[in-house]
Amino acid sequence: MTAGGVLATPLCDLLGCRYPVLQAGMGGVARAELVAAVAEAGGYGFLGMVREPPKLIAEEIDGVRARTERPFGVNLIPAATDPGLLTDQLAVCFEKAVPSLCFFWEVDARAVASAKEAGCQVLYQVGSVEEARAAEAAGADAVIVQGYEAGGHVRGGLTSLVLLPQVVSAVSIPVVASGGFASGESLVAALALGAQGIHCGTAFLATEESFAHGYHKQRVVAARSQDTLHTDAFAINWPPASPVRVIANSLTASLGARLHGYRPEDFERQVVAEDAGRPLYRFSTDSPLKSTSGDLEVLALYAGQVCGVVDRVVPAAERIGQIVQEARRTLRRLADREGEGG
Image (cartoon, one colour):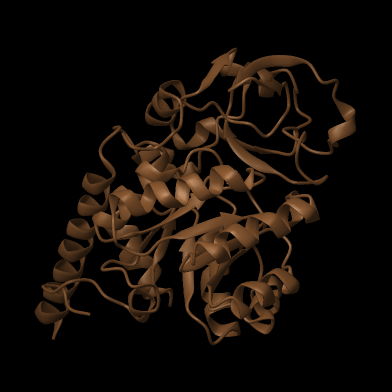
């Protein structure tokens, strides 16, 4: 990799993308338009299909392929999905010959084995050294290491700066950095710590092509890093003790000082919004989408601490272009400093 050339790491060769910039498979938010835009711009995108019906998954896969010939993946979450539905989801992905699958939460060795047998590459998002080792042992081709500062569901308790180099030392497969990455400078920092790329959620939620509701996008753009908080109160629809990072709202304010220690059964099913005819409850994991109506303010407004540097809603291609240009400038600046000191 050189400062003046195209950024490239072995991860790019593995996935078939030009830049080592991955778009997170955010549930509901990451649909065909966003994934295709990321792929066309040289990055690598994942459809966020957690608990979605197989018919929708097939439609979204076809939607990506109608927009681009570049490779992409699908994000599924075995631990948060009924086993029967997961089997059907995987079957659709295999039938459609999806190039890769990204899994998250507890390492499911059977899901990895099924994907590998079907010829899919597997990336596993993890939150600890132990999980990274388990993912590698299960046959994953790469691990995505998520730091505590990440938005959405957060698996571990260490920051990216601390966790990333430990995982790099612990496994032999490519490592991707996630949580706190939305700029070229942060891409260079991740590479310096041994990663082969970055995995971005918040930065791509706030793009024109994402399926997030405009209200959610504007809250991300307006938020400071300190406006996010870590809580497990958004518990409905996920396994117990599954913390998330969200932008503070009136619902989180109602919790007072107690942000953790909640379970799905602690909350009544009180409908506050609806999405395509489906009721959305207070304290559910649902975030507001373009198709959502109702009291959007009390829904889960996912965002990582990096929201503090995401100040505009832009096309996905512009976001990737900015990251790449900043990374090249940063590498040149570091090279110049080394030359001045040499």
